[in-house]
Length: 315
Ligand code: CP
Image (cartoon, rainbow, N blue to C red):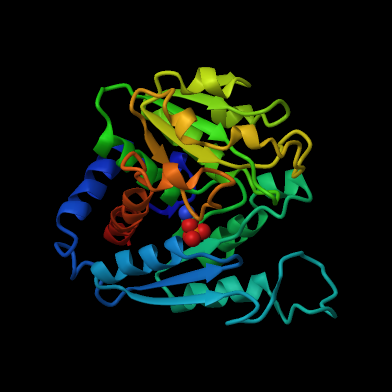
């Protein structure tokens, strides 16, 4: 595998999932594979899970790791070509990406949507510059439009807990005080549809995702109807794709409560984390035995390990 930025970069999803479960069962089995190799990680945005789980996955493969937050650990980066660099950015992405490509064997990049210009975000400007300029395999640590490491861990978790071959999986919008990108729901839809699950997406009017990600899903504005018989409830906030980056609703009735979970088929509750308690979901949901958010986060390690293993084997 030469890059891991979207589902289409994965030649064989079933094989990658098998590898992820192998890594979960035997995390130390490939401890010499990455010896002498270095993973670099560049963060334009904060992270807890992605930073630590990917670091841990790399060290389980014997890799060295260097991680930096742009603008605090490193120089602030200019990303526009032709810019007159008389502002706060001391370095251009052209030199930074090329230099990092000489220092590391694999490069992870986290660069969220800025939510100002849909075309710019959906062109994945920053991620693609690192792919183009670094000359080494690039792993998305969440980009403007997708979060594939999260999605691989999500489908692992569904495979781990599912009680039928084609579970009913409900992705539901939930309220949030700040405008958030569409990367996680886009990616979740892309990967769960590829898995052949029954995917139902529930959201208030105006929150339709880009249909390139959701084609094949059932889409509804009726959250209760969506939750009826659900095996998995994946709550997530996102801002509007149509009115790009806008918050159109603060409706607290979309919060996941025990009453909402009672509509499901003894369903499991999932969220990528971090989660705002009693905004996205009630304490009683997160603290219930049906919440699998911590196991879901734990699966970020074998998911990242499977991806890095596949990339390192091809170096
Ligand atoms: N789910 C996830 O990517 O978490 P972090 O933002 O903490 O990395």
